[in-house]
Image 1 (cartoon, rainbow, N blue to C red):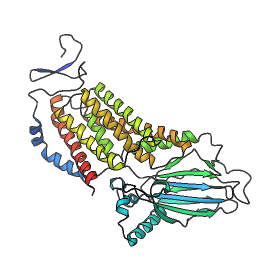
Image 2 (cartoon, rainbow, N blue to C red; image 1 turned 45 degrees about the vertical axis):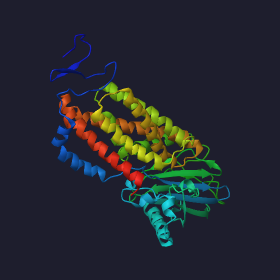
Image 3 (cartoon, helix red, strand yellow; image 1 turned 60 degrees about the vertical axis):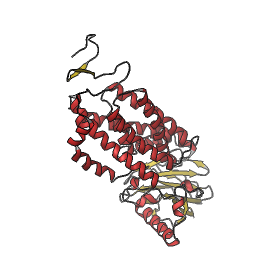
Length: 428
């Protein structure tokens, strides 16, 4: 029915008029006084909440580890290939595993450290295939060292420990190019990064299992080299489409860091959605959240802002619980909600920056990679909202929607948020 002004739709529930669209003072839906209490809804949905909540609580959420493969080829025919392996890669669900930090690593016995090196070599063998064309597949003889990201030395207790495998060799005569393949037996994406004769290649390939990289042109770096590059190969310094390829590759990477791998981000976005199905409410929240995390994603990726993961990750987990509980006890788009969305958006940007910064992109590809990654993240969160919208579109009654969807759904979101926050503070 319409109010007396005939301009704003209202829904009549138990003798009260509740705006279903945005009002001038606040946007959102406040439950009528006769709506079921939170306690009553909990009793009605207790079994479902416990069952689904336990399923979610058994999971965790950390940045998804990628596997960077960096190669440096010199004009004198020298070659260095490095693979950076995060120990979390050894776990069945790598995104759910905690980092191995320097503070824990220093207490490990020598046999345990050697076992980690052996696992890194085995992981590389079943994850990546290396090829020199036209010679075919080759198996690098890697030496493994403990570092933090990008081969930097371990210096602080909260430095994540990486296993950096390095192979130094001389290029055999007559090579045309170099490429790698992410094997189907692997479960993580592989980054193909290269430098030729002092020039960093702008094109970066993000390989998902089963995909093969482009052919990197190595002609001119060996004693008996072909006179022309192989058809379809990419030559440093003359790659006109490299930036667009890098943008597209990182767009895909940003998307999968949300859907399906970014469970904590998915839950936060669902928490925003459950406040209200009013389109303006959703649009405002998503826009504010996007702007906020874009700012910190950019600043942190280029090194202007640095916040340890040990600080960022518990706050991200707490933000999930905060927005979900606010849906239950303060279901309105107020200035407080705006501050919550912006503040936690800034923190989520730092979380995404952690995933992107771990890739250690070359400066020439950083801006394009950052832009593509951010666009991919936005597509990912829009996918989550679209799916949630479609899944609940059939529920027309606002009281029924709040009782059956908003309250139990928000509780299911809040529980893992609180669990992860405690887990990330005290450790496993």
